[in-house]
Image 1 (cartoon, rainbow, N blue to C red):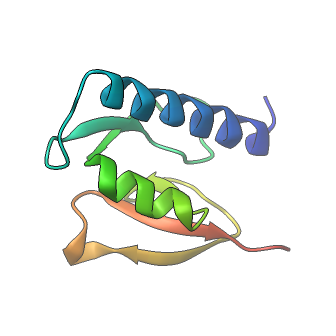
Image 2 (spheres, rainbow, N blue to C red):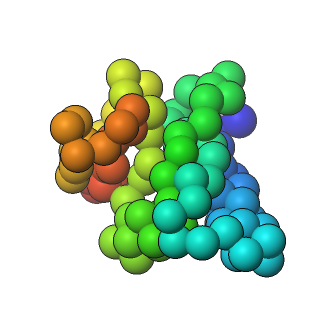
Length: 94
């Protein structure tokens, strides 16, 4: 599977996870497990964040990637102390 295709499929999965959490009335403080959007075809790691956090990163077209997972051509936007176990990345046109 092409790397870019895998990332887009995972982003679709995450959108479905968010929709399901809303259907099940998760509140704005409830943790929701999302799938890591890295470029490793074998990655099955989850990253937990709230729906408002998820909506914020999606509004800026950022990718949710677990720490130390591959995302070549990505520019780090946030992570570290303010975020537990993940990075937010923007794909840089190459």
